[in-house]
Image 1 (cartoon, rainbow, N blue to C red):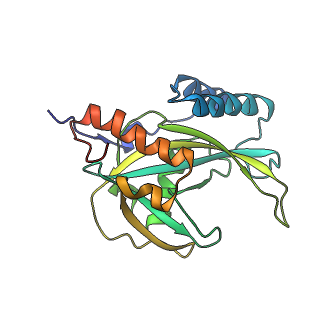
Image 2: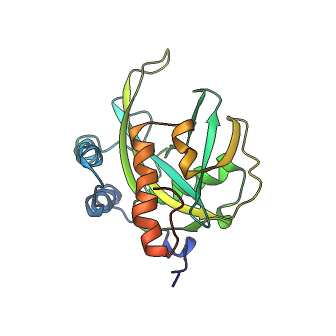
Length: 209
């Protein structure tokens, strides 16, 4: 029997004064999928402990970011955007700019970059879905640094995605076509998690192997 997806707003955490400790607790509770994610998780925890200002992009060594892995309600497609500045396809996400509620930041990015409303989304899971760490090359106005990306899985009904001025296009991409848009190991891992974890608990059947 299909398990209903969780309504998201009731699970947005209210954060107290020990916000960095709460973030560490949430990350520590996350179970890594493979060696690469385990390494990213360990690096993120070490970085947060070393740099309490890690929520701000002014932390030049690196900072936390939040992403939304947005799936169609039938879990057969994901939402990707063609980023104008980087000329690559990604899941929605971005800087948290000091907000310790990483889920809230992921929801904000999901709404802003798809052109939808936060209320259009459901949570596929209340916990962190994935953790990634990747290097951002140096640019004229900032040094090389690391993004520690905390990712949450959402679902949304198939519909038109207006997007915003930061992207050339925003669209649903079938899971078996994701590699044609972004073939990075972290993106492949997101697809594998969808087919092996989310589908197993939701009653959906994978249409790809």
